[in-house]
Image: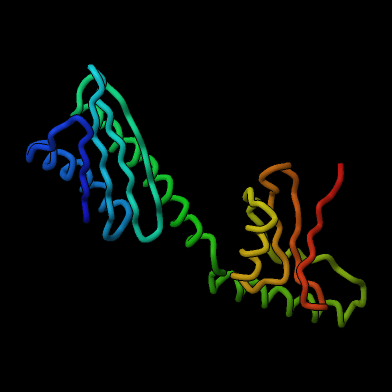
Length: 184
């Protein structure tokens, strides 16, 4: 962890430096990797201000707090940054969990489709087969397009983050991507 501490009308003592670095250790564990941290500490009359910016491989976090005690300001800013880091980590791990299809699910779908094809060949009438379940997560149209490209699927059902309506992004035969946005 690379920590740079700047003082404005404050002398940066070794105790302040150790306190700040000790508080920031938890962030290093949460963000999984080396951090570049810039801390600005300042005093104006009886107000003590702490501003911290943290750069990691995957995130850029920042926070500022102003209290009557410099150590309290540092502690509160670090708490804010920890909440931001947890939120970021949940977002990143959530993406990893949602991607991909489990092998047993694929095998079940293939077996079900084969059974239906046999049934249709014998009887002749067309059946509607439910093959996938979609978790409708809020996305923008651009995010949905990127997720469709990343997954390699032909279709993606999602909830529009701005309008809260169910939309569909699909791959067209001409190679472009189409968007179905129903009107109510």
